[in-house]
Image 1 (tube, one colour):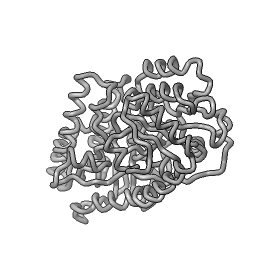
Image 2 (cartoon, rainbow, N blue to C red):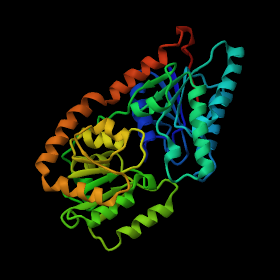
Image 3 (spheres, rainbow, N blue to C red):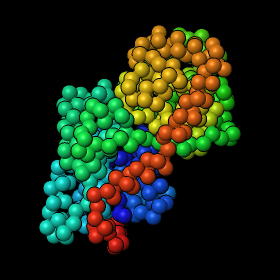
Image 4 (cartoon, rainbow, N blue to C red):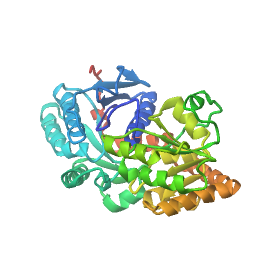
Length: 387
């Protein structure tokens, strides 16, 4: 099959769970012999191919309010008006889904000309309008995008059971979670280059946006007895939220045991996960966090916010805290390090569950089945695509 991914910033994944999802899924589909095209913003795709996937760069306007929608528009234009032959158009996230009625309209025109139409799949990664960085108008547009995606797609993928229950329909809603296959490593060279040593730090890995509650984590860590004995490592960069990132720097001033290491990927991220003493995800809103799956899949003791998407993963095998409550998070940090053996035992039990239930291989198996279940053999392209 020829499959095009639209809506992500691009690959390789520099930050964000959506980009990680697209990279891991597209690369594995390419390994299975499919022709994969991932539409990327210019600052993401530095080469024509990544892990066997064709990276197609298209333009976009700058700024958090215009970048996503204009990049999606230019990607759709490239895909449709340059007559790129594909069997599947896979749209990611509710913002890009705002254009899906337009995509369906153009595709219906293609049916009249070619006699076939690509299948449109939409992955609902998270309820983005719940994220506090957006204003009222943007939230309304994101809600509208979610509706457009659900109505216009042939199939809708929900990465968490909670979102399927809240937003799905029996006609075309399917639960296919994110995955993890990151393996632990004994390597420490990148870790030491960041100024931290193995087993000596608490890790947060994610975007620096307000709904992740990194500010709550910093305050809780500073007030806890853990500070001074361990380092808080914050791995990530802001996502069009420089004011929030600056606020975090201000909160951390005067505390030498808090270290911002910027965005990490590849070997350095693997080493950070492999050697962390604990992992914290205090968000007020998530889809199904890839970062959480990677941490728990490595057997790291986890402290997570008590929201449905996190409970799906950790069940009773992690410390659960109310999002936004500094005292709750402080106590959870102290609990983990008060009895580290018990925390590790729970983490190892959870590791077995995560490894069994959340794998990228299983995700790709399910997506392949979804792609083909309504597709006649005659619709599969037998021609080459040149971007």
